[in-house]
Length: 126
Image (cartoon, rainbow, N blue to C red; front, side, top):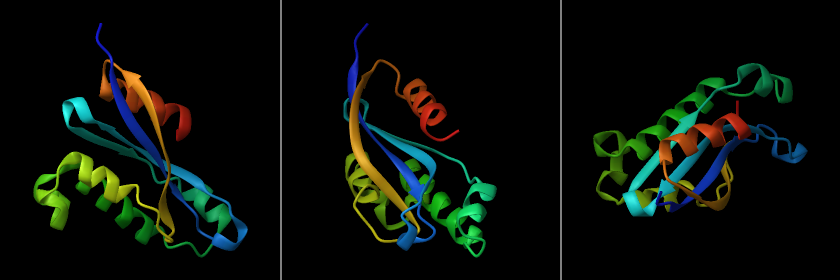
């Protein structure tokens, strides 16, 4: 069984930066060998509201839909539609100071990118 390297990052919400608390919202996974960029997200409203009762849940949901669109590519990716999956992954994982932000990029090996995304999501988000 042949295994391929991949990179992944956790997408997290940091509703109150001054407190440094975060909630994991999803996982991005990029497999260069298959030129695949995948995302799986979840909006844990109760957890976010526990950290900040005034958090903009609609804004967080919009950000997650945007991330999923960029990962899907095509017209859903908006201005990034012409970029390769690797370029879109680098753009999505670039540091930013927003409520929704990427964690550090990690690497691994897999023979099935979708199964690995599901495993990482279950382990790190769900």
